[in-house]
Image (cartoon, rainbow, N blue to C red; front, side, top):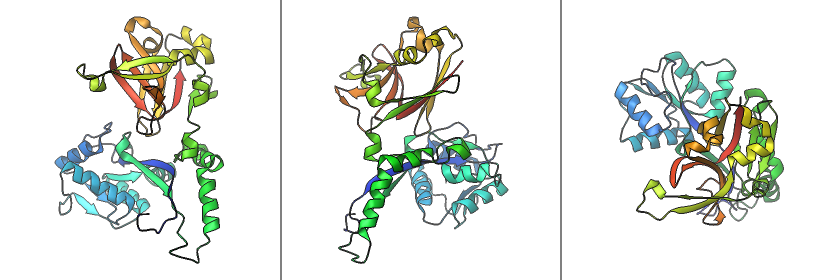
Length: 324
């Protein structure tokens, strides 16, 4: 874009990177979310790691993680550079019972297709997001390009119809979306999908959430009382649940699994949500100091607080699954 080759750039969607490996997990990284810390353990264990080694986006991300870990993997006997695409590397990783970094979409296609049998070991951090954008070629650089069609395609893909197709892609076959919509138009329609124990799904868009009375939450940054508290606003989760299904309060074994678009999640039990004696307040937050949450803040977030102290914060929360 800086050199003028693109007419404009628009965010379209993203998926995420994950680390997969053998079920035996000799490096003991299963359940970690910090890829840098996981790579340090991989190197320390001497477990075989297979790199794409093809200068692709995935290969670049992998090398960035090694750099952040302060490790130069090339030249070590446990580090293999395949010079192949993602599919080939996944099958090689399966055959050698090794580890690799992959995008989730390719992994699901091979895992669900029975070509590989590798569990996901590391996932769920913002640092593993994999963004995609669209840039129509600038006709000033290349006069023969069909710029009108390129712009129409970009408008469709970033508009609500195209973003809706992206959200539903892969759900029927894999049980989850493979890519998450990320255009400006889509972000303006931010929503929270709530799945009831019956399987019924209710969607709350931001305008629906705004109809509830605003609950204000004051939190110390980094839980540091020497800093000025930040004021957040939103709606308490208990108020949303009471509106959707008043009988949920009688389900003493109730749990709610809140999931963010980066795969991170938190499980809340009945006492977290309904028992005021715990002192815990769970709020679907969409305001900060009176203004709408920014992209960095997650647009909508599920914030668990106790007094003015933050217990947990799930940014980009998009789905709540309720289980009895």
